[in-house]
Image (cartoon, rainbow, N blue to C red; front, side):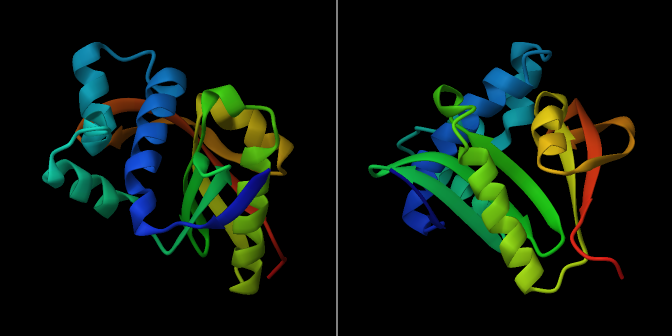
Amino acid sequence: MIRIRCYREEDSENAGRLIAETYSRYNLSFASAAERVKLLGPFQHAGSDQEAHKKEIARVLRADMVFVAEDNGEIVGILRGQHDKLQSLFVSGSRHRQGIGRRLVERFERECRRQNSAAIKLRSTLFAVPFYQAMGYKKSTGVRVMKSFDGKGLPFQAMKKVLREE
């Protein structure tokens, strides 16, 4: 059974591996191997035994709000954000289309409403645009390109969902 809960620091290793795997597979296929390493940043070291790598991944995962989806002790999804910005969402590729991403976003939106946020903005990778549209997010500009860690050239779609009219 899937449980959505708050992230704990001890989740960082498993969450780091999940992010490295899904980010590479679904969002970075356009990039060369060398550029992919730059775009992954510290997540290129997911699974490393080196303490410095583990600490850096844990540092990068910190955000105002971080929720994980857990299934029998296994982290199968993670969402990071703040009161008006969804920073990242990753769901294990083998678990796509099972409602995990939807449940993480719904939990995040509830918390944003509790914090009296008027809207949520995000930068969606092109792979995830249909998912966010199904969740009620609207495109707010055309496709742009951003940096990711030390890498450049990651296409994204700016999106927004109004939670309440101001």
